[in-house]
Length: 279
Image (tube, rainbow, N blue to C red; front, top):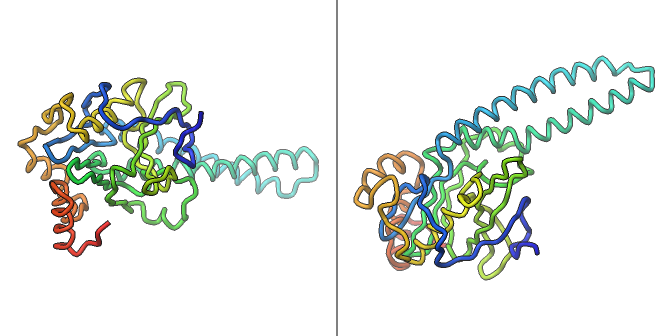
């Protein structure tokens, strides 16, 4: 049975239900929570360094393949035998595949991990039902990108979403370790048509990939199964949290103030104060 959110994302395992969830755990990804909003990071420092190193190694290997492949192609340009033509075609296909892998996977992964700051936090406000992200442009799931974007590796996506338009799905990475990721499908209001994707909880083993989704849903439902002191920062440490995680990371002033908005009217007043178009 396919996902009800279309177009379906590659590696889809299943759709996730919203609402109270007994499968919950704050995990080390929960940074902070108070009665208005909670904050999760999407990248731990260990994961960031690991995948950064892996991407750098792949980049070096790909560069060597391209260099020596191009040399061989140059030597075979004056081929006279059928065998030479076959080798030339195989090498050319290999070079094209390598270039596409660099363009679609290796360089975006390198940029994503290199320019992810403070774990790329995602904020859920349960009073206004808004979700806020501040992340690298390369944190998304695009395969075909404008080549010019590679000239701006620090480009960011800073956006506000409606919780009602975000729907969880689980996908796997096809590796031998069967690592799962929880993705938020951004749909057009009141439809199942996907227009964007947000990474919520990447590359986790088994049941661990469902814990953050469970905690977030319990938080948004004000469920007693969670504690506001489950995170790295306790609820009374908001000032310290904002100083160490939010300050200096490019968050707009209006958005930082909107984290704590308690009503839609209050949110509208904040946006008016900063001359922000209401979403």
